[in-house]
Length: 147
Image (cartoon, rainbow, N blue to C red; front, side):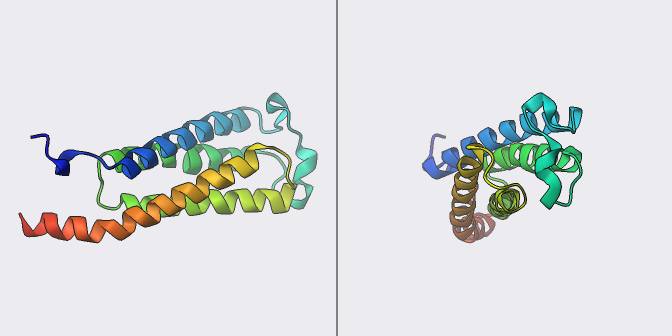
């Protein structure tokens, strides 16, 4: 019963934990911005948004909460449960996070040390997702042949 097929690979465990970390951070930040769209409770102000399409942090907060936060918690569960499309989901989530940070820096400038950290986390997620996605067809074609 303890066969290697039932064990998660180290990269899958790393990916699931990475997504869990990103998800928790996204939910915490998103809730803070949704509850106080001025950003004041988080030490931010809306003046930095002048070059962005937003007047306050409500839409960015909702995006952070649902796509980055909840999305990555779902991605983490999908990775740990070996959901068939977890690689595709991970590539989307990692790519979204990388793009999200790039847009932040374009619109706001480099305003927090968290931006480069989450950019690197997004790159890691994207690369792990690409690796998982590349390995999935072989895994699933073997599983489908045995059924």
